[in-house]
Amino acid sequence: MDTESVRLFVLAAEKLNISAAGRELGMVPAVASARLAKLEKSLGADLLHRSTRKVSLSLEGAEFLPYAREMLAQEDAGRAALGLGSGTATGTLRFTASSTFAQQYIAPRLPEFLRQHPGVKLDLRLSDTQFDLIEGSFDLALRSGALEDTSLKGRKLADDMRILCAAPSYLAEKGIPQTPADLSEHTLISFRRNATRPLKNAAGDTGLFDPRTASCQLMLDDGLSQKHTTIAGAGISINSIWSVHRELKSGTLTRVLPDYHVDDQSVLWLVYPKTNVLSAKVRVFMDFLLREIGKSPEWLKD
Image (tube, rainbow, N blue to C red):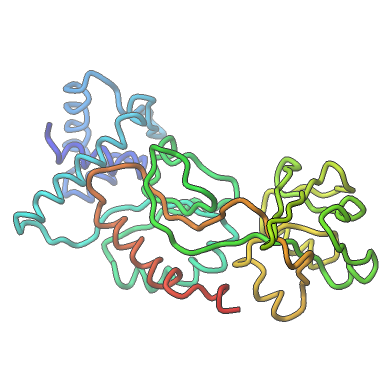
């Protein structure tokens, strides 16, 4: 298979523009269209849908895309092993992460990464709603929790812990819970679908954060909004230490049931689809985040 045509397909799938993908590889539009058509004929499938107004990825194209990226990674690794190629990270990196974490820790560091790696373009999807890596054709994602998906591999970025928080004004008005059972008498802020979360302390005592058995008028799917409503006194919420450590230090928020944390083995992972070869653009971005954020997480210092 002509890997240059495969590279053209990957670029066209990322840009949804065949002419722009061709120009990046030094091809005029007519040549780029012809090469893609030849690739599709050899595979026996339409990889891209074309119209006069737009280009979109077909179902077959979406299924082929991760394999195409794997082929290119294998070729680049092979050339590097023979001393060929520049070994420089290039191409578009599709990365997804929690918008709350990205705003606080990743976005401020992106200019430095792009300065260090001018050949890499970042296509970021930032949302506290998780995207599927395979279906979304992502190269890398930041996830919090246990790494359970067997189709993914990961590297630990940093430890995480989720705790209960409330505003001092709320606690002054409603009182301070002494045990997890007391939460049923309070107003809880729910993060997505009123999910019940297990609580545990160092002695092994357990409890529940259960919005369904308490007053719960507010359900959110955005961590930053949840933090702001908690600061405003809307109730008690669960937050990651990395999200609220500054507010806890300043006294804007108070930790509720300080001996307890959410018992979910939460860890921050950088995850990527299983592959035999990690592309240079993914490797350098992972190394950058591990060095800049994971080496000495500021939330653990506080």
